[in-house]
Amino acid sequence: MYGESIPELTTQRLLLRAPQQDDFSVYEAFYADASQSRFYGGPLKSREAWTKLAMEVGHWFLKGY
Image 1 (cartoon, helix red, strand yellow):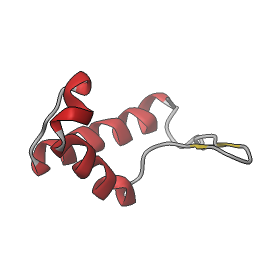
Image 2 (cartoon, helix red, strand yellow; image 1 turned 180 degrees about the horizontal axis):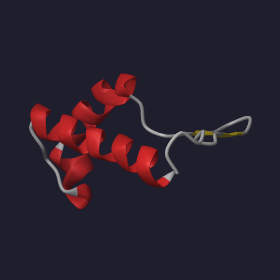
Image 3 (tube, helix red, strand yellow; image 1 turned 60 degrees about the horizontal axis):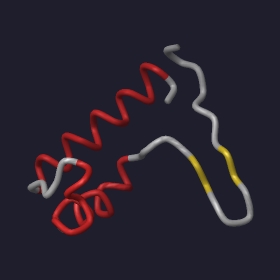
């Protein structure tokens, strides 16, 4: 799957796309809040949130989803 483009799905109300580095501030805030992130492995420290984002970006690159 290397090198293939990752699709985006866009509607009037929604954009589905692969995670990007610019999403980190949102990941960081989400995972810092225990009430929001507790069902997703949180809360996480900033470095742990960065690792989670990096893993998800890598998964999209390697697998396309």
